[in-house]
Length: 410
Ligand SMILES: [Zn+2]
Ligand SMILES: [Zn+2]
Image (cartoon, rainbow, N blue to C red; front, top):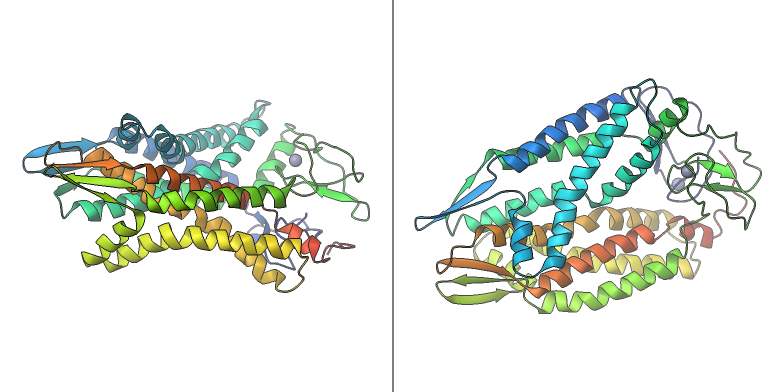
């Protein structure tokens, strides 16, 4: 196996149940072997599907203010944003809290369920690839936190009733985390091999040039410069993510440009008794702090203002040090890359909070909340920085520093 973070080759022995193989250089997890892995993941996925349906069909959250009653279901926020003309924002919210989690659960359910059959259908590996792709974009846990921030903003304004749908969403979040934790990519692909759905690859000769598949993780022998397909999953092989540095630079530059309108223009406008006050991201934080909700103000400040800036600075440091071939602090920079990749999604809290407020607070003269164009720019920053982090290949740092010259297997 090749380490996906530093590019070191390892000869991983057949693991015993309950053991995990880590990279000997950067400590990334290479392969986690549990006999119950697929069964557990299937059980969590089944439970997740039930909770997903419950979250959609049971009462979600409702609001009562001066005798006016307004209820919202899980998807009301998406339609509210669409009706206000912000279809881009509606699309991002729909993808991250409804479409991606739903399709990921559905496809994992079919893949893991069919793997228990004697003769599973041939298209299972394709469906599994699709489910893997969706993992980045399913953000139920971030949405939960967005609901929490919206809730604390609303309880001052009106009486809020939390329905069983919201509780189901919390349970869905836990089951999705558990399913993701139980699932191991290599275990799934080996299960496909055993069922004859993909060819079993030949033994790799570590003295000849090798290349790791970015889809299934298989390391196979390739001739330098040749355009080969992975012998296991059939996807095109690349030694490193193609044009990684220039693509990441381009995305970082776009995110920096969009960061300005995201902070200058209002993300939402609260109209109460005929008077409206536009809110930018920073004024929203100040409002929370003025109301004495310090922990929440700190949370939103961290997620919406600090995280995007630190992420951009982090990516720029990674890019510059890679281009200069710096050999110092390679471990720290690999950790920095992991942090940048992991925290990016949490900046969506503000967007989710807006989608919930816009859905609920539609009470005519008494109080109405409208989304602002700043929210579209902000959502773009979050999505673009996420794609930038995905495009950066951390192994290039180790390559550039000469650490992978004459790589030996260990
Ligand atoms: Zn490593
Ligand atoms: Zn492959």
